[in-house]
Structures are given as structure tokens and as C-alpha cells.
Length: 218
Ligand code: SF4
Image 1 (tube, helix red, strand yellow):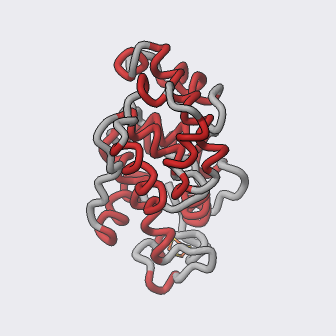
Image 2: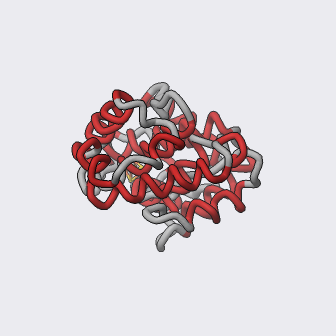
């Protein structure tokens, strides 16, 4: 029987501390969350360094850049013509709100709703922003989480396993632990819980329905 909180400990033992998100400010986290969509972190990080060099990792400055100029700066992140106006809209949103500090006083669901109204921000990006930019207790509902938690719990279906698991975990884990969890899930998905899982090398196999269908999970 595996308690929800034990998952973090098992993954941490296997993969070690992850210490995400590599950013110098909460606004930079938001920018990174959008830039990393449909690309690797390495590519997103190159685009972020271009923005840093131009002092554009401030909402007030970023909202005033021409979309064409911004697209060239973020070209390494891919889909740059699409991402540029979305980043400008994000910067406008933050600047108009009065900055990250003003947004930080909103409750989590209110903040999520505002984020989801912005172009290019879906549930997964909103989860990442809430967790890493605003320190909210959120389990990021992405493809890796659905894969790993779905396999461990044996619950199939779009996000159903993640939502059920999240409700157990959020009661039991602090933001720092949830922050680590997302990074650990990504590490585990790349290591052994791949599309074709390597269960014989996995430290969670004793509690995983996929590997041992008769075991149970709480
Ligand atoms: S035992 Fe297999 S399916 Fe389960 S978490 Fe590990 S790698 Fe994934």
C-alpha cells in the first residue's frame, strides 16, 4: 500500500533533489512556462537569456516590445511568431494588474481563472505558473503526471487519476514538496516510466498497478 505522500519520497530517493524552477523572479517563471510549451527547457532557456540580455524580463518592458522584434529574440524556443504576441498579452496582463505582488493576493481559483483567459495558457501552463510563480499547492496535470499516476493507480481517463491523486496529496504535502513532485515526475517519465515503461528498473514497481496489477494504492 502506497500513501500519496510516499510517492514523493520514493521518487526523491531515486532521482535526488530537483530544485525547480530555474528563474530569477516569479515573472520570469511565467515567461518560461509559456516559452517551454512544445519545446525543451534548453531551447526555452536560450530564449530567456536573449530576453534577459535586453532587460525584457519585466512586465512593463516586455509589453512594449514590437511582436516582430520579440519573435526574433525568442526564436530558439520555436513557434516564436505565435508565442511573441502571447508573451506580450501576458506582460500586459501583469502590468495592468499592478505587478506580480498585486496578483499574488488573489485566491488560487481566481488567479487560475484569470490565467486561463489569457491566450496560450491552458490548464497545464496555469498549473505550473500557480505552483512555481505563486507558490500555490497544485499538482501539475500534464502528460507525464497522467502517465505515471494513471499507471500507478490503475485509473484511466483524461486527468481523472491526477485529480483524484492531487486531492489526496494536496491535503498532505506542502508547496515545497509539490514543487519537487512535478520535477520528479518529469525525471521519472524520462528515466523509466517512458511510453514503453522499464518496470524492472523502477523503484515504484511494488506499488504500481501497471507493474503489479493486484497491488493497491491509497
Ligand atoms: S513500475 Fe513501470 S509503469 Fe509503474 S511507475 Fe514504474 S516504470 Fe512506470
